[in-house]
Amino acid sequence: MGLLALKRYLPYMRPYLGLVVVFGVAQLGSLAAAASIPKVIQYIIDGPITHHQLGQLVPMAGLLVLVGLLEFVFIYLRRNYSGIASLRMETDLRNDFYAHLQNLQVSFHDNWQSGQLLSRAISDIATVRRFVSFGLIWFLQTFVTFVVVFVLMVGLDWVLALVVVACMLPIAYFSRKFHHRYKLIARRLQDQQGDLTTIIEEMATGVRIIKAFGRMPLMQKRFESQGRLLRGTSLEGIKTRAQLWTRLNFLPNLSLVAVLLLGGFNVIQGHLTIGGLVAFMSYVFMLTWPMDAIGWVLSMSEECQTASERLNEVLDSRPEIADRPAATALERCSGRIEFRGVGFKYPKSDEWILRDLNLTIEPGETVGIVGRTGSGKTTLAYLVPRLYDVAEGQVLVDGIDVRDLQLRSLRTHIGVAFEDPILFSASVHENLVMGRPIVSDEELKRAIDVAQAGFVWDLPWGLETRVGEQGYTLSGGQRQRLALARAVLGSPPVLVLDDPLSSVDVHTEAVIEEALARVLEGVTGLLVVHRPSTLALADRVALIDGGTVVAVGAHTDLLKSNDLYRALLSQEYEASRMQTA
Image (cartoon, rainbow, N blue to C red):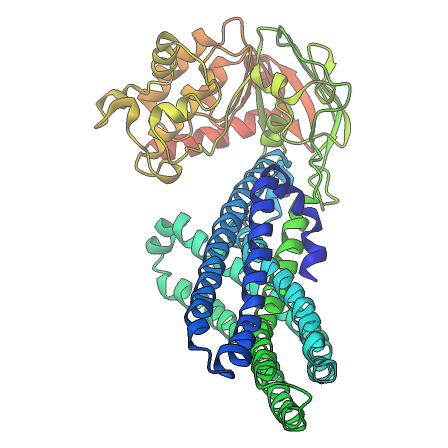
């Protein structure tokens, strides 16, 4: 059950082995103190009380208090150090999980709901930690308690000890039945929690669309419907746990009645002293809480197993885009890019987006990419920084297949700005240096000037102003200009720009294009073009149709010789004119 599921995560406790040893010793110490209390009570009853030795009663009572204090100290040490060790384990596991999410390819995130990943990163890892810090400890303590108490019971009366064991045998049957039923409930419960998290996350990120279309009642209905499913599953889990706990609570009471009857008979027959009977019953009482805890531990164990399975679904996903064993670092980059026989289709799709595409961009050259909507222009841009891998052919940088280069090294030489500008809930400065952590103030100012993002100096705290989640405290044009500044920061030798000016006004666009023209001098540029005015930045233009390059040439030449190119530009011109009107 949960113990087997934990096999993968127990190595996370290895760095904290010292803490584990301390709480292990404390656990044994607390058990030894608790087990010695009934023996002390037996000695008091059969000794000073039975023989009216009042002088020995006070010292024995003091011994009982001392043993109780020792148990208190050991329990404190056990709980304190187990909590510290498990929380540190949780932190390490969550850090590794987050790092693994970052290493996974973009296509993985395309196919996973963000709410499901969030619930795994937060609640599932916390479930594993709770079982390690509480459930696992109680399981071990319950097992050791049963063994120790049984040995001590045999020393008092082996027949009564066997009677107690017989009363406990149904535990195995109840536990097995609970396991088969509750594991399905636990999995469904945690999946539904992930679905509910997804709905909340979609509402938070899409709140403007929801309000603009007046769809609050619809989203509320979706949320309440998912909440009812979660409530129903939770109630089913509560009912299943209650049935188990009720049955398990009955067993100690059954054994207590049997011990009282048979033990009383043995006392009357003179086979057992009154002190021995009291001690034996005290041991039975010692089993009452472990018996209660078994149901709790079993439910926590099933939840831990389910959480582990859900975590494994992510952790077992191997990054498809990663450094090859013999990958080399690209120390210097001249910027020559070649698409050689490139074919690409998205995972879990049979439709080719690009097929037999050939295109070469020489160092220092800027090439614009033009094509119909859905022709694969943006996909082509994704292939250069290796956000996706080609299914056929090669993408080469300086004559080297990008798959033979170290990812970090490759992406260090490439600046990217996509059509949808992504900003993080951080300061303007942190967003700008996301791609180039170490830059000078002069480089930062230059990038801001190129992107015409001087508005940052007028923000309440300048570059240290936080822009809110996804940068929604800024306008669309401001977000796009910051994304462009981030791309050109550090003067990377290759720039991949996917319609980086779609959200700016005509005047700002003209000023940015003028500055970009200077930046692109001596830099290899790949421009995905949706607006005719941006073509002024391109030395050549590649026309994509049907997933392949059908024409390459200067803008004026294609305008004269290619009907499709001319038609596409006229459509885009009209759309651009209507947008700015």
